Each structure stands twice: as C-alpha cells, then as structure tokens.
Amino acid sequence: IQTLMTGLMILGVLSVWGLSIQTISWAQNTFVEGFSIGKSTIVPLKIIIGIITFIIILNVGRSISGRISSGSLLRHKLDSSAIETITKMTTYIGFMVAAVVGLTMAGFNFQNLAIIAGALSVGIGFGLQNIVNNFVSGIILLFERPVRTGDWVSVGNQEGFVKNIRVRSTEVQTWDRTDVVIPNSEFISQQVTNYTLRDPHGRLILPLCVRYGTDTQMVKSLLLEIAEAHHRVIKTGRNGIPKPEVYFMSFDEGRVHLQLWVFIRNIRDKWQATSDLNFEIDRRFRENGIEIPIPQHGLHIRSSIPIPFEKDMPMPPQPNHEEKDEDENEDKPS
Image (cartoon, rainbow, N blue to C red; front, side, top):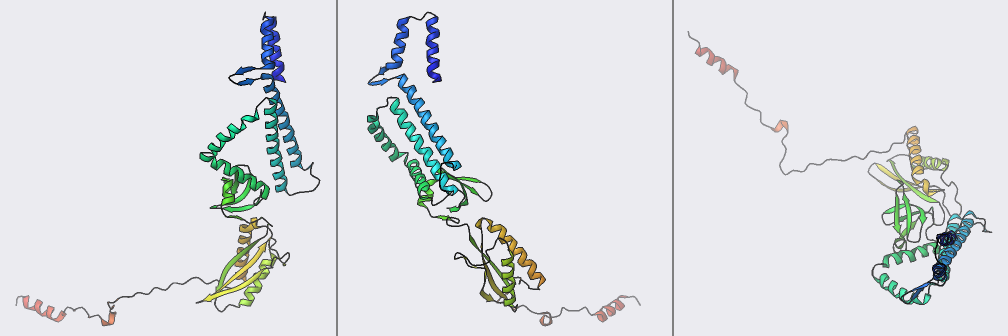
C-alpha cells in the first residue's frame, strides 16, 4: 500500500511540474495493463498485489503459529515437542500457501512449472541431491518424531541434547556446551541412540572391588543403603524399573569384584549421581574398615646366564704385608 501511494504521489508531483496528460495516461495504462517482454506480459499492479497478498498471508500464518506455540489454540495439552512440531509445520504450510497465492495474484503462469520442474530434476540429480535428502529427512523427523527437542541423543561420534530441529539440519549441544549442526539425513540413514525417547530414567552401573575375605553380605547391605539414601535413585521398583541391586561378578587373586546397579530419575544427572555415589561409597568404606585392594604387579627376571651370589664369587687377592716389610728392611743400609 505504501508503494502504491508513493507511486501515485510521484505521478501527482510530476503532473504539477508540467508532465503531459498523455505521458501520465501512458504510465497509468502501463502500470495497470502491463508491458510485454518477449512472450511474457508483466503487470506492475498485479505484482504489487501479489506481494501484498504474500505478506498478509505470511503474517497470518505466523500469527497462527505463535498462538499454537503459546497453547492458546490447542484444546488438549501436548508436550513441548509436539507443540513445536505443529508450530513449524504451520509455519511451512503458511509460507507455501502465501507463495502460491501471491504468485497467482501476480499473474504467474503455472503452466511453466513443467519446465521449472524439469530443470529442478536435473539440478537435484547433480548438485541438489544432498539438500533435498536433508529436506525430506527433516520432514520425516518432524512427523515421526524419533528425536525431539530436549532429547539426549548419540549420532555417530557426537552426543548431546537436541536444541532445535529445522528442515535441513538439527542443532545438538554437547556436554561441553558446543553447538553441533548435524544434517537431518544422518538421523535417518544412521543408527541413532535416544536415551530419553520413552522416559528420562536411566541405569547406572558402578563397578568396585574389595579385598578377598571381606564380608560380602555386609558390603552388599552397605551399598544398598547408600543407593537408597540418594535422592536421584529410584528406590522401589515401579513401572517395570528394578530397584537397586548388588551383583557378585567374579573374584581373582586377592580381590572380589562387585557391581552396584541403580536406576536414576533423569539420565541427564548421570555424571552427578555417579560422583555422589562414589564419594559416599569411599566415605562409608573408610568408616567400616573396608579396604579397596591396590593392584600388585610381580617382576620375574628370566636369564640363561646364572647370576652368582656373593658367597660363590672368588675373593680378590689380598696384599702380603709381611713380605712387604721384609723388602723394606733389605733396602735399608746397614
């Protein structure tokens, strides 16, 4: 609208400056009816109307997406990932509708789409294959939702939390707060480990060993007491989640190997819970006199040459002090 008003103002100013009526009439006819370039007819008025229509529909789509994101348009409560998926799909659909309607209002001939589609197919076959692959993979991720925003995932050699899922790529934040942009095709073509897909619970396995001869039943009771006292550990089995257990794995020379298995409420607290439990195990073991054996290494020397001991070695010749004294007496003058 501002562009249209600006154009009319310019024509008014030019008419005041002495522009002829014929020139103004020609400009009006060109603006309304258009002009030809080759076999194509370009109508500036339709182009402006198409742009205005595109902007209006796009803003309406964004407004609807914003209300969906805030939850005001949804009757049923959904999780944040589902709301984000609906919001993004609404935004994409709104953009496509705005583009189609805007191009139609601008006088675009969709019969030429066959030529454009043919050119795109050649481009896709050569240079745009990866882009289209990532785009289709992004649509699959938004609909199937194998990963969601906030999930803890492992893809290839990258592991972290999903921060944002876009049409072409997904942003993952690692444990050291580094943002990694991963193409969506890797989430579809590769094996993806999602630690929080069904629920946030996770298992911790703490291996430890005690000296051979230690009362293992006392150690077991002590470990279970430590696990059940931690606020992050699920204490009683529920929803198919086992309660804390201690397993006797094996024993060797001087050591007994045990493992403490616990499930925590949120696998994101894995490192903190592991550290807390290990600190408490060390403290309680010290209080109860339970020793953690230190690995011992023996050194064996093998040689085909016998090593003589001191008692077997021949004694070095000792000087004869008596003969030395006699020689000295002979040398003295009488």
